[in-house]
View 1 (cartoon, rainbow over the protein chains, first blue to last red):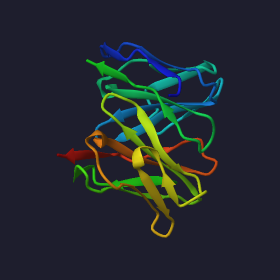
View 2: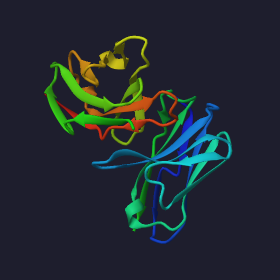
View 3: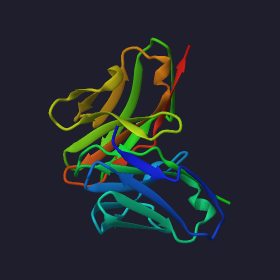
Length: 112
Length: 113
């Protein structure tokens, strides 16, 4: 299995608070991705990174920011969490364009 | 822009019966195609991938998929379903040179005893 660790695995927080989710990889892969998974919507890309300090938006990026200061870590931040951001968040990594993505076990985030 | 349509959000088959999960894609250039499986409370795992080397692709756990360009399809099959195959399955497409993969909405497979 690809070495991907997401933390925390579960989090409950209140509306308006900042939240940061961490993805850590040990594969030295160039690409890292953040998705959210919601019933009826499948997986939707939030942001992705194609190298250190190189990031781009996905289809549902509003309300989220990311940072990648080193190859192995990709952080997802909700600056001011809203109830609509309650979801399961997955990190994925890939060695390159058109290569399969390998997923972490997810973070279940509940915003009350 | 590429897209993926999975026909049927839920599919039920009897144990031992053929599994057929349908996927149609849209892409303006030769695509890369993937099938993933997700078990409860886990991340997605790669089942198989099509990268133009062969139209019939074999994956793990006896799953296979056939790329049909004329039908823009990449259906997933397994000859004989096992109870352990109960999971959600996602088809995905990536266009040549694209950094991103687009996922379908998923099909939940139920296995009846």
